[in-house]
Length: 395
Figure 1 (cartoon, rainbow, N blue to C red):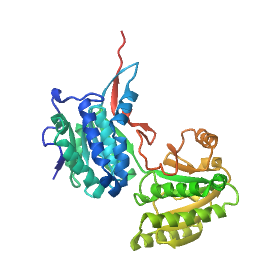
Figure 2: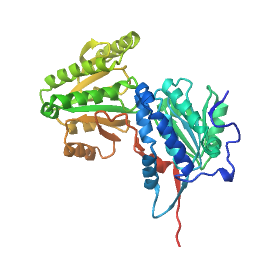
Figure 3: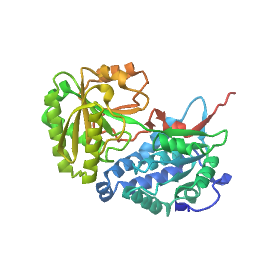
Figure 4: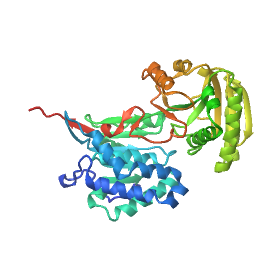
């Protein structure tokens, strides 16, 4: 059964007086009030990721997005009806996707997974609290729903949509695509992605102890917030330079300290799963050695860069590989690769790496600590523009 968590039940095709505009003031007001709810210190302490979400939804940020959408050569309008199917493993992603679509003036239906965790419940509670004082058009045009595996409901919502936004991996995309869209509609998909981290040995050695610790703290946040299962969480760490054993040893030592101080815990079942997966990699010859210094950290030495695993091994599992330069990684990158987080490199080194890739892989190159920071440009899409359509006017 569908449960309307947000909004009221009724016809999903809104009458003309419920039409929204790009940057509609009623939507900006609603999202701004939601931001204030999420930025309350008690909420941000309990769920740090909601603080980042609240910052993203501040009115100043929203107005910047609306300004970005304006074009001198065309009129900008909402795309229409948008059906969002976000993943269960990242509780906040549905808000980013929905908020940008609502800001573009679309009517939205978001399917919230029944497996979503407490952060999603906190967001939904805040949405309902803000809805009480919002313009009634918000309730009539924006819906958050939950339902079990029901092809009839998914099929009906797919036929209603002008744009269907599918997160959650290749299998999710393939399953949803079995439900046809209208000929004029299309999909915006976010399939399986892999992300990496790179550490310059020269940059590490040149950094003072405080900078090194700050880098490890950022890396820890990138890796542990969503049990390393987020698409932008790093899987393999590439050590770039010569004779990197000392850099790796100090990095792991600091990682153990920071994980312990931050209170990140890996339960026994996860620790066992990581060992099984690590030994499985070793059995294929991909891994030459392994370390298990704590349940929270599993370190592996890769035999070669092409052996870097693209599948999730477990929370706190880090294969390491050494290369002489960033350019040696280019042949191993492909379109599945999303985020490349880094420390210790110069701007020119990173730019040369990106230009050599030439768009064949890696959508985001960001410093340690920013891998999970959502941006309106994601997976190579300019999302605000994806949620709009253009009308040219020639006099």
